[in-house]
Image 1 (tube, rainbow, N blue to C red):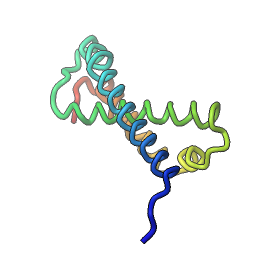
Image 2: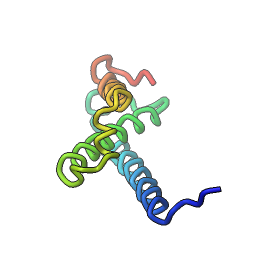
Image 3: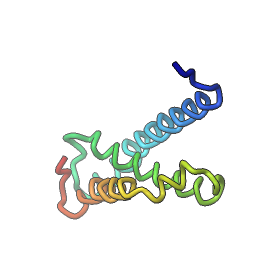
Length: 110
C-alpha cells in the first residue's frame, strides 16, 4: 500500500479550496448579479436555479484556468491539460447555453 506524499496532499487541498472558492463566488455572482440582470430583462429567476449557478461557476472556472494557465503557471501540466481537453470546452459551451438562453427565450427553462 502506497501512502500519499505530503506534496500531493498539499496539491489536492489547494485544488479543493479552488473548487470551493469558485463555487462560492459563482453563487454570489448568480444571486447578486445574474438575478437582477434576468429580472431587468423580464426573466423570472425561478425553477432549478442551481443549473444557472453551475453555469456561472463553470464560466468563472474557465476564466480562472485561462488566466492562471496563460499568465501565472505557464508550465503547469494541469492547466495545459485543462485547456486542451475537449470535455473542458464542451462543458464551457453548455454553461454559456445555460446562462444566456433565458435572454433569448424570455424565461428560465431549467
